[in-house]
Image (cartoon, rainbow, N blue to C red):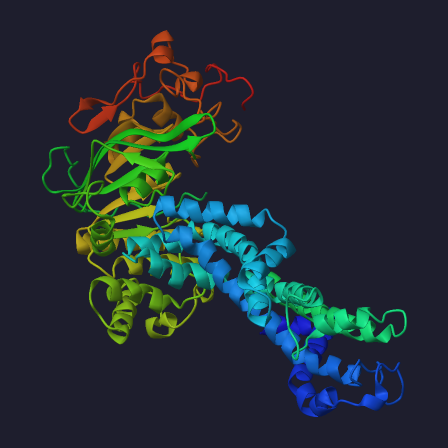
Length: 635
């Protein structure tokens, strides 16, 4: 409201408000004040020109054209708004239907919308006018259905952009169905641009309605609107131009009012619309024993997991044959450069990979249940109560249009059978558990009123609404200052110890993972290249890529006269993976065998696996040396 008031103080905003209020007031008052004069027949004043008594002249029955133009405001504006309401409703349903319908049905809807958008709006209006018949009802339906494809395309684009947000994924993990996600999380976040487009579109609908009435397809006698008056006045354009000029000016002024109003609303909404000192390992905390693949108590078991997406030239496979197991109470870190497949692996484990992406695995089990073969509703219920997801960006982790407490309470309402009040009480308890200050007050606030650290804690609290057996934290400390990072990591560790939940921590920061996890999975080009205990990472790492990651971590004891270490080159694209080891072109130890055959993850010891033909066993080897094999075109 503050932004809207500020915009209304500008010349454009003030002009738009005054003009729109004038048009709406005229639509209400005109029939009351000038209604009788507009219908009064005077045979002594037939087809007169403009005069003091009749400002725009009279028609063939001696009726005052100025009064009729004013009175026609109500019908013209009312029918245009009704047609726009139909267009917005139908367009929004069509635009958001692909998010609810099965894949094939959704594609049919998209295809129909794309075909309809290709036709000019007025041509569609004329087509529907013929279909629905001549008259007011037919014209309203014709314009409404003619404008629907445009709104469907806008709603389709907006809903697709919102559907990828973290808070939508969080709602799906919580077990919310497609329709509930659409109504609660998608529509509220695309309502503002739809309102702006509807307001601007009302002017176009008004012009279209006037055009149909002008052609004799719209409003029929004895009713009249501006289009019909304009058509009657055009027959006398040479003898009395004012008869056509009056309704024409009315259409322009009203259309301008709606367009300026839309621009004003758009202007108002437009203001809206690596540190390393972190948590050290707690003294005396027992390190969890690594979980073996055949452990019957494993929380998450992944074997041969692959994720691929279609491309114009074939398929891209950013995750290839990932295998690991996560036990109860175990903290496992996943590290690697951007594009290594860390987040996609976590999303696939949570069943959040959308079509056209495809997930395949020899085995993908959570809490002993196969995730790829059970119905989606059953998976949502299982994950909603036993899986917590902490996303990378705390700003996008919550729906900005809903209060924090209600978003947490949704989990309890969906899966635990609690009522609205009981679920909110539980949400407040969870906010207190994750040490959000003044939880009762904070539960009634919106996400933008929380700091980044509090949003991240509230996200963890959402995961605790059920009884989590697994917490997936995807870069939970990104963009947080070092103090807040420490607090978030301590909170995750405390929750793990209190609930015996397993933690899968994804991070670019190898120091964070080393200090907070028992095991480390190193990923490169969609594969796990090394799996070993975190406490022995610096001494026992054998894969050249792992050693290179360790070598580029800044050290306070390092020689400041030497440049910081870097890993030359860059990872291969998922669509252009080499035949052999994906790291070969960046590795100083690479041989012809590395370039022709891809090494598999093989055990070194009981708790250490590495995928390399030439593992590095010399602890003092420098894996960022300048004599490594260069990569053309890369730094």
